[in-house]
Length: 149
Length: 149
Image (cartoon, rainbow over all chains, first blue to last red; front, side):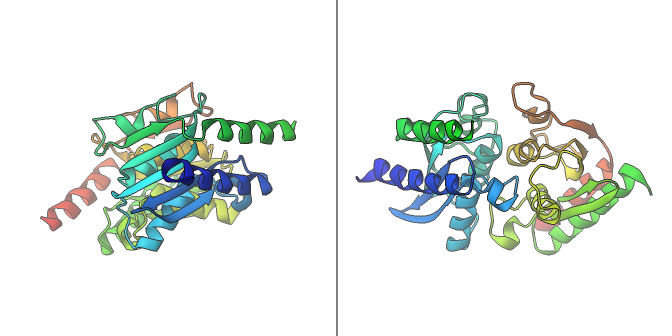
């Protein structure tokens, strides 16, 4: 698999790790010039950190690796539509593009509840693509929640 | 100074630290049962971290100290109206109350651009008070930006 599908497959693999520590399975990879420069999974429960969603973990890793907070050359792959916090973080990092797997109708901030990444009133707009790996991501989430019932 | 004014004075002191490392002066303290359990200043430039706004730094410190991500007994004092990312983080941490100094008409997400903390569609609503230490916070920001011109 190449391109978007390949990077989303990597994000899905990170999401699998989240489930191993009882966190909702969401994964994220940050790509610059074809290279993964940061990645992570949801670690809210594992780290007892309210900010440790997959996107925040991956953005921090990428910024640390590159030594800069401005990631305007980055494409971010995330298995679930970002929440308000994470959509705001993607704006804060000035990322170029976000590729999203499954939608989050309850709390998604990239189309479902809010449209944070395409708001001309904010200082930065982000290109968005939907539906890459959407079924696999939705399956992961369904399996996780079914196992907790 | 006691109560809200005293905690906001502490947040203003943290904001002063941000300016010493060339970060926009914003400070934040997290209070539970009258005790400061987490605090921090904007460290975006200092840490080259797009997520290192004062609120995120302070929430992470509080969660680490308390060993839990759910901060539903916390009141958060912040010198500037939170951006989308930080307002989302306050929801994510389920904080009880937020006290805000100066407003941010350009990017504020607690009344100015968005109303993230009082959105009944999201999973959690947060009580908000405005205007505590607002003039001192606005002065800090003006002084900082004037010095950079």
